Image (cartoon, rainbow, N blue to C red; front, side, top):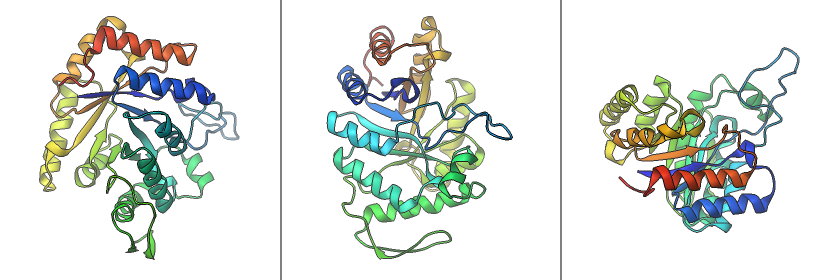
Amino acid sequence: MNIGVVFPQVEIGQDPAVIRDYAQAVEAMGYTHILAFDHVLGANPDRPGGWKGPYTHRHVFHEPFVLFGFLAAVTQRVELVTGIVILPQRQTALVAKQAAAVDVLSRGRLRLGVGVGWNPVEFEALGENFKNRGKRVEEQVAVMRALWTKELVTFEGQWHHITDAGINPLPHRRPIPIWMGGESEVVLQRAARLADGWMPHFRPGAEAQAIVDRLHGDIKAAGRDPSRFGIEGRMALAQVPPEQRVKELAAWRAMRGITHLCVHTVGLGLTSPGDHVKTLEQLKKDVLGSISAP
């Protein structure tokens, strides 16, 4: 099981040197990947009519593709993972181009996690339809894979029309792996048919294992091989007291089908980016041991 970290978007600040040092420290400790959340805009909770959500306009979110272009230049081995890019609020061909550029600059280290999102404020501002986002995402995946694997593409779909055009450069990996986030039944069915992996939010245990087993059944029914399908769990340290973390990790490692795990350090009351690094160092020493252990 590969173990990476969640980039602490809302707590790391805006200093490029601090972001560089964080990424290099994570890589030096042996963590296998850095996963970044995506939000383009934050809403004002005091807006007319009110608004509720986990993030507002006061939360810092570095744009994932720009961030990863920077991290590609200051790291050597760590995988760069979007977790997730809200695909239906973005232009498909532009996402394909941005992802390909990061993959080239990182020499094949990009894994593209995508999802349909939950915040209509962002869709409105970006000029995209919030109501049909689930339907559009499947066609978006097909368009991106075509653009990543062919020099020239002609595509006629319900929402996309490309006539004899292509992106250049093509990505290092053709195609770039696409993982999906979300836990609804529709998402699971879509991931089973189309995705290379899945990013759930559940805690380890019997209920989670039942979901994974059902997903593996859906993958087989789609004529695909579950052993080639990745699943990334998330260990939010704010939800797991220190004395329970060894047990939590063991539960993740005991689950069938879990190939990756990311450690989330936001929400612990840490006061500096250096504290996030120290927390990861201590976790590796006390709990994780070999990060790539089976």
